[in-house]
Amino acid sequence: MASAAEQMASNLSWSAFGKAKDLQNRILFALALLVIYRIGTYIPMPGIDPVQLARFIEQTQGGILGVFNMFAGGAVSRMAIFALGIMPYISASIIMQLMTSMVPELEKLKKEGEQGRRKINQYTRYGTVLLATVQAYGIAVGLEGQGLAIDPGWFFRATAVITLVGGTMLLMWLGEQITARGIGNGISLIIYVGIIAELPTALAQFFELGRTGQLAAGLIIAILVGAIAVIAAVVYIERAQRRILVQYPKRQVGQKMYGGENSFLPLKVNTAGVIPPIFASSLLLLPATVAGFSADAGSSGIMSYIGAYLGRGQPLYLLTFVALIVFFAFFYTSVVFNPDDVADNLKKNGGYVPGIRPGKKTAEYLDYVLTRLTVVGAGYLAIICVLPEILISELAVPFYFGGTSLLIVVSVTMDTVTQVQSHLLAHQYEGLIERSRLGRRGKKRR
Image (cartoon, rainbow, N blue to C red; front, side, top):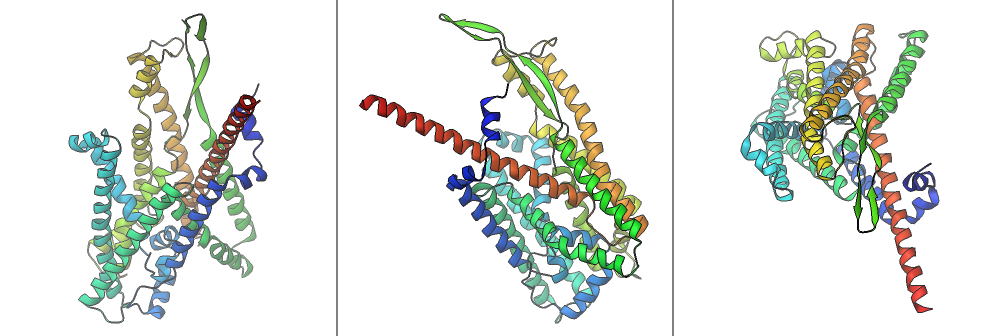
């Protein structure tokens, strides 16, 4: 028999959405900020030769810069004020999360609640400024080296650094505002909108190659079928979970008997969600982007080596990508789900897993199950993200929407829809409570 929450969820409709004014305001607020982001991707950075930039992007769009351009919503190809995108903030967040696990002082801050979280967020912003400054300076020097700057020199470098760092900080603020006052995760939505905005252009180019005969019709159909298969796999795995039975003993309070109920502890197969591919891409794009702007085809040095060995489709790039995805899958899972805390909470509330002793044994059992699920989840993420990259590089298909982009689009869509449904359910509960209060007042007046 369906629960009350499931019955209410099945009754969600457009009429319910029309009555949820707070949800409508949140969606409109998020859309307004996302429109500001899209406008910023068309505002060019000063001092860039647009003709030379177009030629340079045309030569490098199939490589790592094409991937970075995808995450930046096309801002790199236009060298806009948002060309750095949100990646420096993501990289700073990764570093801070790693440091909170290793540095005792930061770990104490994390346990201090809201005040500690604000302090960690402040450190993350400082780290974002530092990373964005280093990356922006590298890009400015690279632009000069490629002959894309109209008037190269320190004034151009300072202007480029200030513009790019300011754009990243504005994006970070927009993402935080969307998360706090809008709907969905702001940072993920910014990446999502950037990918979706470039999808029509990429599809048009893709089908144009088929029309002109550069791609076989069978290959085009195979790629489209593969994309549909990836979407289906993402939807299936993201919804898959391992439900652990939890029982609560009966207890008597006065003359009433409480407890004796069964519930389930749901453990998702992919607990980390879309975070590992985003984190892995962010760390890979950080050095490769600077190398892509700085290294010429015949130059030597560390930048040329980075550009050669960390190029898209290269074995080192793929191996590093897989290793980072697996690492962040386990790391982020350990951050969002602590078996010891869950076991303690179950023990305090009288709950237990049948056949498992409460306390330490329950924590070990949960850790065992979660580890096996994370292995499956990490393998799924690695296959979804890396296999299309291998096929694209081997078949020389100029279609950069691989598994990572499809994973982000599908996962963010599902998470946002789930949040919208949660707000609608909360609105319906508030309406029921308000009607019950009015009914009681009416009975009292009678």
